[in-house]
Image 1 (cartoon, rainbow, N blue to C red):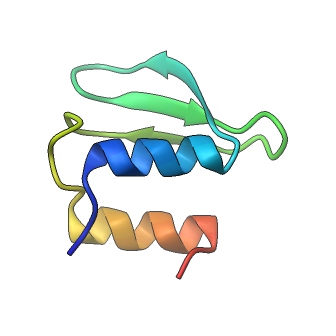
Image 2 (spheres, rainbow, N blue to C red; image 1 turned 180 degrees about the vertical axis):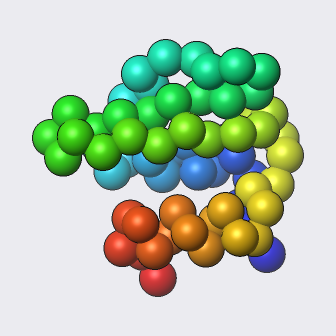
Length: 64
């Protein structure tokens, strides 16, 4: 089961990402100042992250 958006936001912060800016609608743009990576996360905090999005994010971040 994929995690909730709030859990992914917490994980991104733990990995060194910061909130760069709010995006349109429910989007939040995170960036990592040390690696230069950025990622836009969609959804309200209580929503579940869609499985394909979670799989892509895990692969991109090198998580299992």
